[in-house]
Image (cartoon, rainbow, N blue to C red; front, side, top):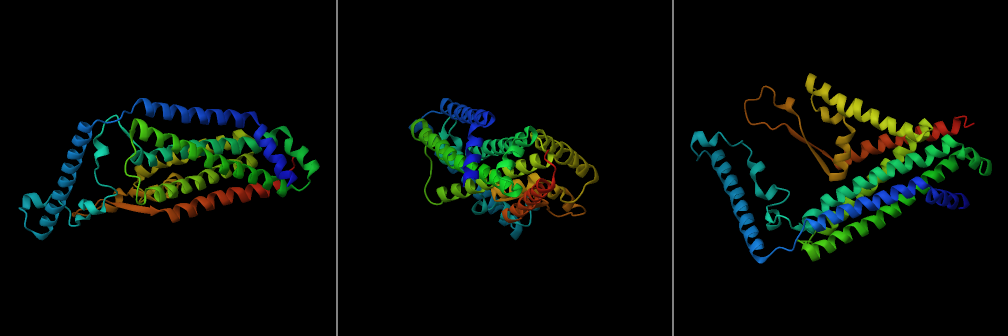
Amino acid sequence: MNLVRAEWERLAARRFVRLMLALLVLAFAITAATTLVGSHRPSFTEIASARHSAIADRQALEETFQQCLAAVRGTLPPEEAQDYPPDCSVFDPGQRDRLPVAADYLHGVFTFADQARPLLYLLVLFLVLFGFLVGASYIGADLSTGGVVNLLIWRPRRLAVLGAKLGTLLGALTLLSVLASAAYLGVFWLIGQGAGLPGETGGDFWPTLALVWLRGLVLVLLVATAGFALATLGRRTAAALGAVTAYAVVWELGLRVVVEVVSLPRGEDWMLSTYLDAWLTGQARLSDATACRGMSSYCDGSYQIGWGLGLAVLLAVVGALTAAAFGAFRRRDLG
């Protein structure tokens, strides 16, 4: 317990952590202020017009679906029927993620229910960046300055010391994420109440939002662990930053070019960002142009990767990095 308490104090005392916290608060404040300035309470005329537009669009979707069904049944003229695929599920309003609502047609009006999920994704992005940088610098600075050596003199158990550092980091990030999320969403809820619209927050709105938040929290902890592990392996904070930059340039950008040139089937499956998307959003929707080669009938080449596979890949990558970091730290000469 003394080791964990000491690590909490060391983490809280780091100037870089305080700077990152200040920048995090500043980013939140700018986002909230921008939203507040750009929103207004809609008039009854605006709401009535928006409702009319939403109803018209829903009717248009239903008409398109019925025309597709008519084309499949052969009751449409051939020149019109060729515009529709044999599977009309792509036009089925009941299978859409959401139907048009009045809030979609209210310009300059912040609607909490519609914007909560995008705002939560933005919060997760902030926390992911914060977690990676703090996680990498927390161990990287100690390794490069000899702080870990001094700590090992007091507690000569390498794996326990490194484990305490990682556990402290993840515990602090979890606490910060809970507090930041409550304050962040609370502020935007108040903006929706006073300078916009709250929207439809009943039904499964809050459980769905809570699930997105939980996925985001897991992602923050995984990315922070990866930054911690990379800095441990490279013995420098810069090593973690360099590794991520090299991966992004060489693999995420460079390999995409190669995939396009050679027309590799399902090239997105080789990108770590695909599994990040699948885990955070619940399902990554992708398109494979090579799947439609030689087909004369309708083909969109789309496929999905679920959150389960996304989480499995992320756990495998982060787990391998963490195991390698602990193995290297146990054997490495720290002098």
